Image (cartoon, rainbow, N blue to C red):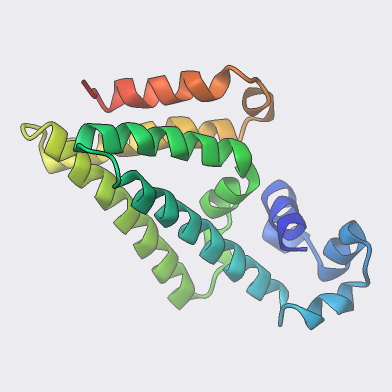
Length: 176
């Protein structure tokens, strides 16, 4: 149910999808969704929470690597794989954040910013001469390239794209 809601919100937009639409897509009455979620908004909030949790799980998993360079390389690989595996979730987090209530929107943006801060910190550890602004823009550029794959169906279906995008991210980050 949540996966279908995420897909529909990403493809059609949060405001264009009703609980009846989601229910029909999963073979239940729209009102039955209330047995699992209090509202359509709660589905959106849960989607954001799950997406954020998954990104932070990948981040913590990367820290097992022996160096900042290796951590960043693993982050690039796992981020690209995440967007290939969950394109609608990434798309949703990029396009539908404005539909969250102000406090949840602030939390989501803070979580995104903190996630990027980790990449920036790691990048500056690998490249200490890089100023903070340039490092942040560089990280945003790498993530934007990857995010574009999530939003471009013919790219994410190509089996060669994940490796190519990972290499582009590594090159943008100028990793040794």
